[in-house]
Length: 215
Ligand code: AMP
Image 1 (cartoon, rainbow, N blue to C red):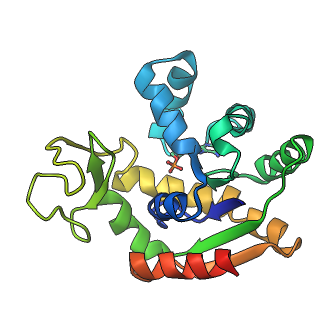
Image 2 (cartoon, helix red, strand yellow):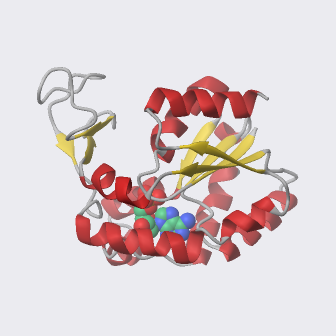
């Protein structure tokens, strides 16, 4: 099963993709995670992307299209994948269609996670993760059971994304509305777009997604 999770930054795409990975044995492909790994490694690609990401702008279509195309060819994607953060522009959506057709694959579901803009700023600026295992936390909504200690692995070091600050969030939301939201009618016209209420509690959103995907 191949699916796209669409929605603004902070909608919960990454959080839900982790649940779906386990539930349906498919792989999360996050272009944001791949780009952050490239930045951390100091590769030429990472150096190219770093300033753009820190400004909350989008990196070039060709760069992410190639990254995703190569990643989908890896054996761990054979059972299916969840695209998280890609496509983000209409040209990326069109390129994805061509790429999947060339590979003999197709999209099964495109799911929009709907969240109000006002909620997103608080969600994004408060989030952080365990530096060791990547488990996600939030200053207000999801604090570790024991202060300073990761619930999942016991790690004590945490990190925040460089672009999760109030200023950059505004640019990222503006980019979403200008560049990414126009993808929705593209999939709507093809009859594969569905939506979940991303304002609901995390477990609730997971149940909505499971119901849609199991249908
Ligand atoms: P994300 O983790 O999905 O919020 O992505 C973080 C940042 O990576 C974005 O603000 C962009 O700068 C860049 N990025 C991630 N995915 C894409 C994409 N599909 N197209 C262009 N830029 C992207």
